[in-house]
Length: 512
Image 1: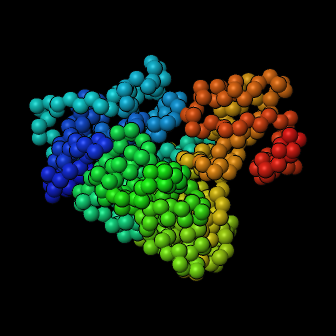
Image 2: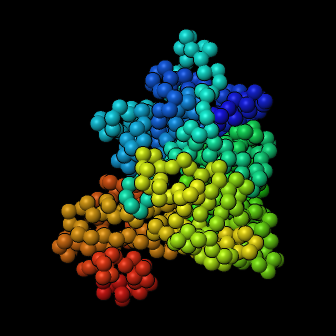
Image 3: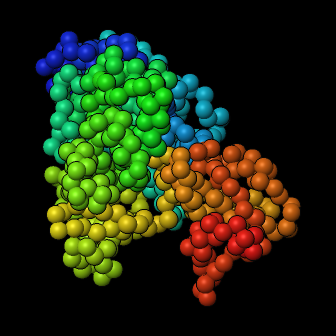
């Protein structure tokens, strides 16, 4: 089934129920929401020549139009390729090219210059909506037929081996993920509102489905991003509201709430995930907002739906086991099985650390046009997450490490290899190695160790300017540490553990 049927069903059940809000202003009920989506689907079909199965990319900030475009893509039978709006144009163009996108929506239609988009991909403004031709009055009255196994969402997540990989999520994957939400995360009522404060191209956008299915409200902040004070105002005016937030966002919400004496009025649920939440920060959030927090653990390959830690467990600080439970990522969600295995694939006993594996209906179809990566990740029906952790006897899953050296800064994944690839393109850079450093505000920050071809030929400012010309600013190193050589083992592999340890000793950094 085409997941856009959920919108059609909501419009038929509750045509006059409020649907879309720009800030605190209602801009559409469910009938108008569905009508605009169908108009956009007809526009895709007749003006842009998009056929079922074609890929359509979105490089836009959060907006009501973004949500309409997503559903228009599915209504027409096409595949959505949401791209993080913070990415550099060169990165976005590569994704569009790899996906074979026929069209890319941007905020103003002027992101890419002539010749910067590959193949026959065209850029248009996402806010333009024209009337459907008279000949199409009866066309696409319902979403184009799709099977559960048909591709719906192509999500690009970077990897340490180089270029981004396109995670293929089907209509069935998205439905299974969505149905886990009211069972394992938070029940949804038609009077609820979901606020999109984090990018809709990622986890926050994935939570739209269950709120559409239940006829809830969708609120797009006027800032089109995250501002804690604005969120509090919306919650008090439009509550009860729920939102998905990275731990860094939760921390900033706590700081702002304490400054203005706000205690969470109007907030129903804060779902956090995407990075570790330190116990001290979780304790402060509970003191500030009360029992409003739920944790989820997922990956693009099994979106938002590997495990969940219920609000009751998080709030029960009188439980003597609370520190261990709160430090976990909860129990397996309803649509999946989770196990921990060793390098030989043997299932480990409770308490033994190994690689986390998951299987179930939300797990991806595979990687787009990358059978080798698919074969490595999907083994015997199980997704090998690359994350290290253990299960306890009660079924709680705890993450102990992240393989692949991913850096999580402000809830965004930053992969060292892609940063290194840009740095070593500079003609004066001989070698570069990127690691994460603990950061009280962002969780982790990016640090680049750089070996120059000619010592002193380049400084941090010049290298930073080079980087910003090639990659998104949120991935830039916070520090550039120039050294004469990088530590390596007998096989020539750079010792990243040694580099991380050296960050705690300025003398050792100076000796590199």
